[in-house]
Length: 412
Image (cartoon, rainbow, N blue to C red; front, side, top):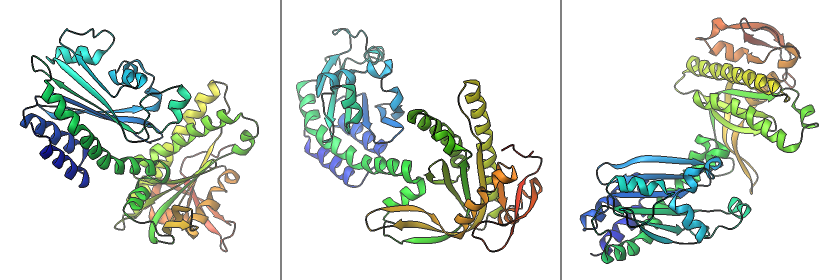
């Protein structure tokens, strides 16, 4: 069997950033076309995502890529992961291992081998391929926790009665580095986007990766500005241990972020104990965007109420959340110095949203909306009630503010 044509195809696939599923499917089919009977491939890669430790997929000859998996950081010590044959290989510093799965070898304690035997497989061979940052031998837990760990795990299984022959192994060993390089090439953009999105937001990440990176490169857009702040957080921060404080913040931010994202808003930044998000107005759909932002705000507050009840029942400190909604034109893009940029929104509308939020506590409201928002929110207007005209700090003229109808004033 000649490996050169397959290696050439893999190189071209990597250069074209072929989607991973298409790359693995093409690789599996071509292995079989040249006579290497492979019935199942497993491909797994580490990520740099703060929530997801690794992603993997399974290909089989009958259905192609038919299973996808994501492993959270918290799941890395689970029995399922630790019983993987790759866990043993990483612990032992082994880059290649063959196992008969048709009864010749002892399969106790490794469920995947028992699954392969039940499916009629005879042999499994697995590799761990470093991307440069991955140490094959993992030492202490602290070392594993703080290392980059970027690399590929790959396995091939066959149902051929005698397993893989010498020629099969020779070809696989020749093309595996090229396959790993192609996977790395096509996956690094996804890893980069996931990492950027975790810190910048999905839309800013896409724009940065597409080349919107020049300082001062901004565009004017109309958007609903969604501004939040935890009430009384400063006093809590003075009395709570650091780790408890961070865990508390994470819980409250989870309440804030998920509804905003679910309603197609963009979380732009966390500011201490507050959050700035935006809902872009596209094609003059003011009423729909305002309704989405309002629905997100209500869901956020409901989640915070449930979290507060849970924390109080557990004897933990709890706090209220204030939200303001305002609509106007903002500048969206890169702002900062020549060495450090931020992808965010700026402008008077952002400042006014911040000033409106500061009036939530004095007015006894968890949610305040500007006059501009109330005028644009035609689909939700009957749910809003005027709270009178008020002076915003730094704004020359008084402005009318609105709350939700039927919402009782909050105690401070």
